[in-house]
View (tube, rainbow, N blue to C red):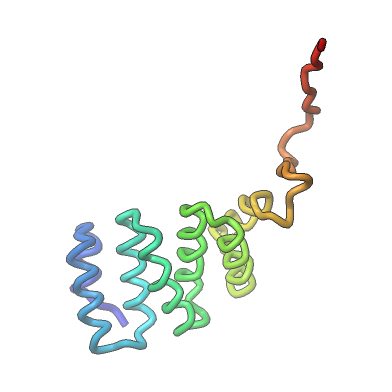
Length: 139
């Protein structure tokens, strides 16, 4: 379903007006995954990642193939520094859309951030080929 009114507001970056339109439309169509996706995207574009989580979650539950909502949900958690949640969500949606560069980038970028991939409190880094040496104390 396309909604030219909401899409027009989003194109003009009138996020608050688009949010109001989305909420009004959802009163009439409470199971419309695309409307939840629009609502989440409006919050996301405003930088309100916490508010965007629930609409993206609802959109992805209502439509299990709505991988775009799943990718944005993972990005919200990433931006909120909730790396483990972002990583798990990105991995889940990567199974739905295995060729998605956004999801693959999230998985690759987050794998070193999650608790299960750390050793003794230090993050693994495959990026550095050199050793880290600590200065010795003369005490």
